[in-house]
Length: 341
Image (cartoon, rainbow, N blue to C red; front, side, top):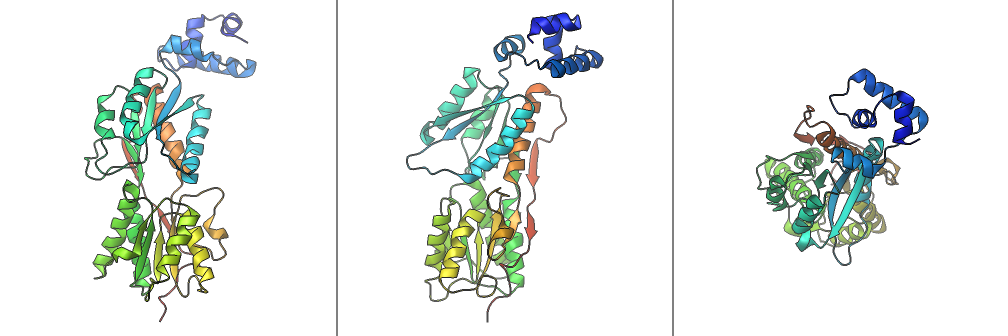
């Protein structure tokens, strides 16, 4: 079934059908539903090139992906993209990833926007005072930020998790259990989410007259190997921490292995809380000792970012929040307990 055949079947012009399928307001709702029903029943799918000529829209969302030598695969990125891809598929949008060297990322974003190959895009891997924000606000296409940027006024569209609040709550819970020696196995220090998680922990400690030792903090790529390495180093201290916060369940996977190899009992000798991004293949309740977590779904975040971007393209007047800050849920399981004597 092509557009000409669908036009003959419905007795409508090809222009009317195209406008109905692409949500133009001048097509009345009865006609739109009739066209949508016929397209579904006949299996008609608009030619993307023709649709682009008719609407001026590419039907695509974009991301400039910073790449560096030796960069490992990131399960967190894949989880976010899965949610975004689900929403793109539902609305018949494509998703374009443009790789770039980190120092060329701003230029790559300009090239992506000017190429006409995307209708909207999102920014990720946010850092403090991120220069991409000023540039993005100067460009014509809609965008959204996954995360935020410390030191920059929040006058841009974003979706973020309250990382600061999540780790503040987690730390307070452990303090109430009697813990005073804390460690943090965090993500890379220059990333906004990692900085905010450290801030939340430090705020909770300061509120109880405690402090975080500098040598009890590690900033690393979030892999299980790094979690194991940094946890093993922490356990070498004469007075090791009794409470550990991990920025990811992936880091926690390695940290738990180091704790077990040291002959310690999780939840008794040492307590651990991890942030859970609701990764499909790594559930905190399935650890040998189920993990206490702060949790927020990366997949749902990806879906929501796509939903807002697609809405900005197809229905610019839609009443959607410009800024969203999701809370993370604290779920207590067996990996936390009272501080050891």
